[in-house]
Image 1 (tube, rainbow, N blue to C red):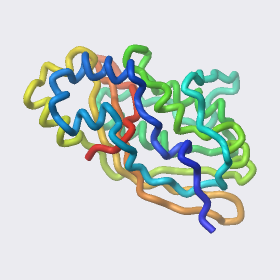
Image 2: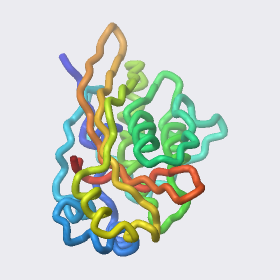
Image 3: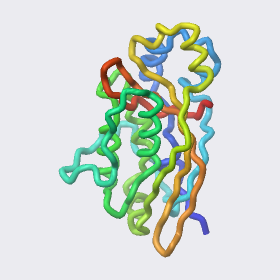
Image 4: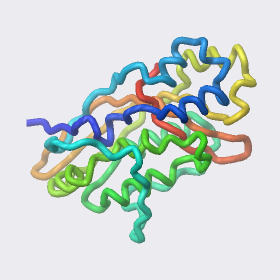
Length: 230
């Protein structure tokens, strides 16, 4: 039987940006873009079109609290890779998606997973939506059950691109992005999961990310959009 995460899993792409972060991003990054239906839908989270991935048996529990802070364990970030030094939005978004879709409960604790993911985030709190990223990690009970099954996942990225509405908006007003330099990027790929006794599965994945890439600085992750925009 195929096993699946609940909706609060690493691959269900978050529950949406908070009101303050939507206002900050909408007002200072893409203010002139709000007339475009695609961007409005992206920033306000008009539904969640994500697929539920194969994974461990579900646990009857809620996802991480919205106030959950990123732990900083002394043992490091386990198998979570360090953020790359990339200054190009699409390339960074592809690397971030690969990080989000990959994990290994055999050598990485839940706290390590969160700490490793937090290192990819922008330090500009006005734009950082940590809730949307932390929401990818299952609660402690489910993570423990996944670890009991040696569950781990790898990801293959097939492509990344700017959504059409975002490109159109930038073409109409290129200066709109120069306040916060946050770019909207959609990434497609495949996640492969494995667990004990030869169990496993693979599914196609898609996610839309908000990536901050200021001039002369490496990119960082700002948020995970509540729905995929192609």
